[in-house]
Amino acid sequence: PPRSTLVPYTTLFRSRDGLSCNAVKAFAKDVYGRLWVGTINGANLISNGTVRQYQYFNVKGQDIVTGDVLSIGCSRRAVIATTNHIIDFDPDNDSTRPVTYDGKSIRTEHILMSGDSAYFFNAPLCAVMVYDLNTCRTSIVAQFPSERQFHFTKLMHYSDDPNQILLVEDDRGFYHLNVTTGALTHMDQLGINVTSRASFIDSNSILWIAYKNMGITDL
Image (cartoon, rainbow, N blue to C red; front, top):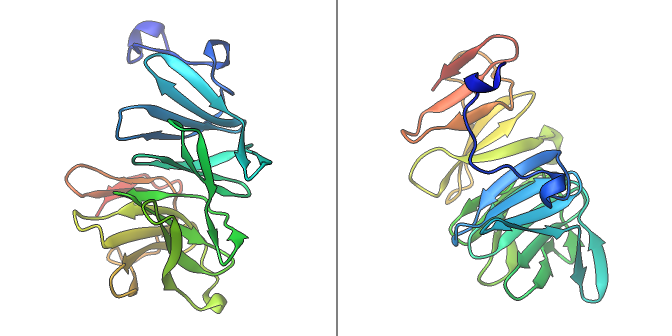
């Protein structure tokens, strides 16, 4: 469309402006107002018009290549999910911690922040987990039978209650998880299976869903 019909932007960051890559996959803003940008070639921190690139992190003397950044969650620090690792990174003192469970690296597609807690789905364990940025410990919130073969690709808060989480799965739709009890309930109010990643929750706690080739609706 003509330039005049587009929403005007105030700032544009591209690879020529310091961004590690133009193929952006994730955004997050930390408590200090700085913008984190995840790309297929590393993470970027934008602050006061300056871009800092993080294409690798040093963990105990070993360089971990950032590569494809799938998701970023932020509070005081950034929790960065890549194709092979989850990294807890503090840009102010350049400290890096690997997020692990039982001594093993974790892979996830989406991170949901709630204060200083980072929630994510661990597919090999078929479990929703939480990483506490204060204690730097990972624990299981809810674990499901492996035969159910869940593969949740997104986590969202469905209400003001931080203990209520919505889990999104491509093939079987939406599930409600009570963090306190671990109870998992399929959301079948519509009477049909909802299969789409395209969804968001607005400021009125209304869930908007984009069906595959069938338009959108709300819950």
